[in-house]
Image (tube, rainbow, N blue to C red; front, side):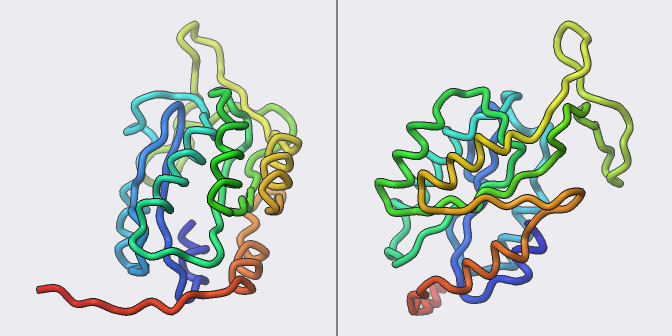
Length: 188
C-alpha cells in the first residue's frame, strides 16, 4: 500500500482494513502524508475478529464514497487480499460497488498452494505461525477465481505477481481514469 501511495498523483484515497469485520482506518483524503500515518498504524492484532470478510470491506467502501463531500467521476477500490472469503457477503459487496459505479482492482497475494499464516514481530521477522482454537496451523491460499469474479463483476481487473504485490499495473489503470478538480480549503 505504501508503494501505491508513493505512485498516486492527485487522487483522493481512503483505507479500509478488514478481517472478520471491516473498519475505516483512514477517511477519504488527498493528504498522502496523513494516509501514510494511518497506514503505519495498521496492526493485525487490533482487528476485533479474525477471518476474512471481503463483502463487509466492500460495503464499508461504499459508505466511504457516499459520505464524501464531493462526488468523483471514477471510483476505484483496490482490494488487496488472498481472496479466501469467510464472511459470505461478497454478492452484497459486489452489488454495492455496482450501485455506486466503483470498479474493484483486485490484487491477489499469497500462493495458490496452501501455506501457513506467519506471525511477524515488529521488525517483520517470522516468529511463529497462526493456529486455530484447536491448535491446528491455519493455512491460507490465493483464491484466484474468487478475486477474478469480484473484479469482473465490477468492470475491474484482477492482478497477481508471484512473491510480490502487483502495484504497477494498478497505478497505470488509476492514472488513466478521469480526474476531478478539487478545490483546496484552509480552515483555522
